[in-house]
Image (spheres, rainbow, N blue to C red):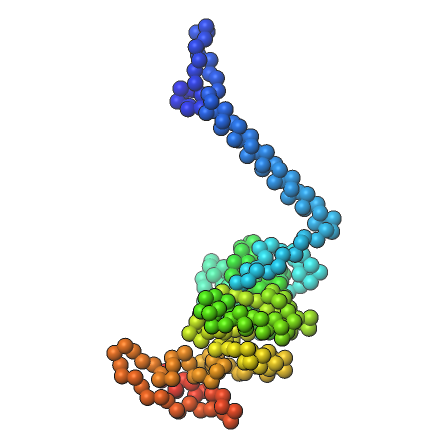
Amino acid sequence: NNYLNPGYSSAPSSQSHPTVVPSEQAKNISKHSNTRVKIMFSTVRQLNAAARKVAAGSSIQKQAIRSMGSAKSFHLNSNKNNSSTFFDFTDENYERANRVLKKYPNNYRQAAMIPLLDLAQRQHGGWLPLAAMDKVAQICNVAPVRVYEVASFYTMFNRTPVGKYFLQVCGTTPCMICGSEEIMQTISEHLGIKNGETTKDGLFTLLEVECLGACANAPMVQINDDYYECLNKETMIELLDLAKADKLPEVGKWGSLPMNGQVSCEGPLGKTSLFSTPKPPKVDVTRFEGGEVDPASVKEHMAY
């Protein structure tokens, strides 16, 4: 059988049977294997050393949050966020959770994981503590690690505290070309925070994110759930000041409106096609005294 092994060769001998000795190929394989083993043990020693430092109270160097919505892939216990802290849904949210669970068979309760995480995040001020993820795992009858995987994969789930107003600035190509860098700088200077930081009063968190899908009305910012589009330096400052006073522009049933007075992203002539005659400008949109468009009239204007 040794003749079938490319790692060995037979050598002549005075004995009645051949002696098996390592070939050059086998020696090289053995050498590389030893090198890999040394690297593996070196890595293990480094990890053990880091773990001992953490156990001794040393802090891990805090990495700055990168732009484009990246988040930490690990969890560090704190006094306010560990497996022993308390979290439970309110009675009202338990009713919502039960309505969600009824959409799925009992043996597929894990399918409700994402909507339940969203429900927990909204209840807990915009972020998910470890205890909330454990509660969702209990309800969905899955191992907690399955919930951790989902919560750490989707950037819409915040695993660290955020401000009352979570400012997500789109920084991809269309918005960047139209001035998102100026918007980012304006927010930073007006609030005194940088990308990934929260104001001391806990009111604002700033984060640059990937495309939010409103490219036609760039640049834009998502504040919590709502979009504010066609921004410039002046309208961005106006938005921030309104947020400080808890008077953000109310978003209508059909979504947010561009901040430049434009009714939609379809242009002043409304909906058109390549084969249709351009429509005359519409003037049937209700406007308030200050000139702002009444969101309630948008549906009729857009001929939905």
